[in-house]
Image 1 (cartoon, rainbow, N blue to C red):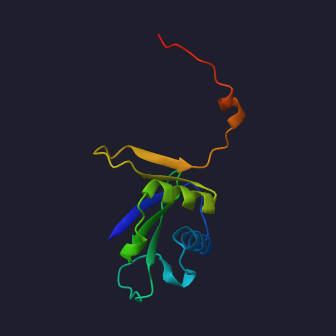
Image 2 (image 1 turned 120 degrees about the vertical axis):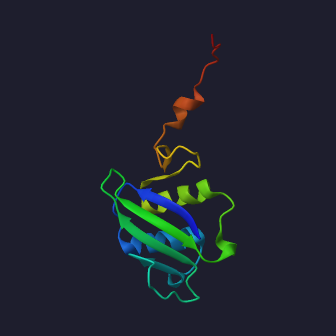
Length: 127
């Protein structure tokens, strides 16, 4: 079962994706398999996360289909897990927003913010 389809705004190397997944899911890198296609492949039982890769002619060039093969690894909070993956890969991603509209997605990534400016907020009455 596909856990998530993620569109990445850069082209990470295979080992970068494997290391990021290993770090985020806290599993050995040997438990991750990254393939071009899942058709006609034999997957060992030790593979906990299977990642199928695609190239896309769009701003977010790489699609990663992530299959979690060990139910104990399914995250309780998908957004938090994907945000950690973005941090590991130093990228932004698009994921489904779970709406019926196929033309909308969520963008997740790290954005630098000057937190001091937000601490200096003034009261404001909206009209």
